[in-house]
Length: 400
Image 1 (cartoon, rainbow, N blue to C red):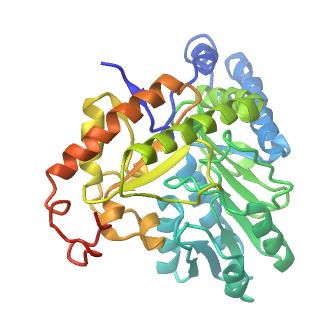
Image 2: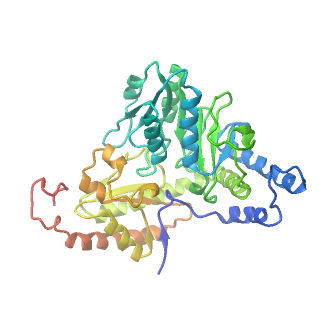
Image 3: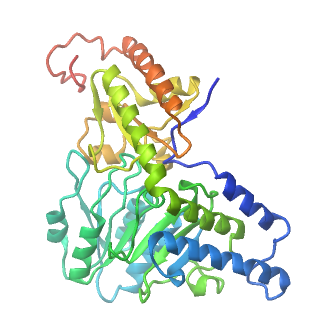
């Protein structure tokens, strides 16, 4: 049975070039970079090269890059570190209702610690109203946190415009750019971002490595203590192999964004058109155009997303219902809830996230196999066969 992987927003395959580059750091170049002897010196240069590669992708100085273990650590570091460092200036954070759990749960933690958080709403397409952002700013606001791209819908947010607002009011601006970096151009200078988070396994590097951009002069209380690594900004032994892999993955991504992701977008659009041409009563979740080039989130009326995913899996197709960090929760997506998507439709949402190795044949296979799956599940659904001809308040789904 063929295997088609369309869950790249959850994680990506380690690129072959990256795997080849990191293997020596598990064998010959095994030293701890904090050691002063030859084994440590042998790997220090590789870390600094990776720092340069990451910095080049987002247009910053290598000294502004701090290596972490993942995106969630970076978000925690940015939010907790900022609020502690600036507690004498203010206690108010502005974020959105559609952020990744790494941001939302950290904000919840900070609320319990006495900080104030404003959660900005989104419209039916999942987009922000910048007037709401301006209106939420107070003299106690010290941090704005808005993701660059949404992991479930793929929505791209107006980061540059938000950066201008933050800069005008003298407020620090953090962006979780885990889904965006490597897929769309990300420039921290033109966007006026002060803190930006990257995760390696979203762009072809190994799991367990990430980075945070900290603009020069930005005061941040360290999130981890116990060592002098990363100029005392993040304690802990360096994941040398992971860091090397992240650096190379960033370099490769920088060379491919326009060409490769332009091709991926064409395939994403082909999949979207194929689904909408062959399946009725479905809903696109997210903005029609302001989306990542690889992401398609669709709800299928009358059926459950879990059934869709299980049936696709039996056909060798890997997709998702949303964030991998909330898979196992029976609650509908908080992102779709914030967009006021009806609960039954939110439960049927399916996310297809393409990768650089997705082929036209993969897309055609999904277009061929998905419609029969949807129809078979609907034929078994009492909601689909309820017989209502007007808007079904009992079923809370689209009418047939």
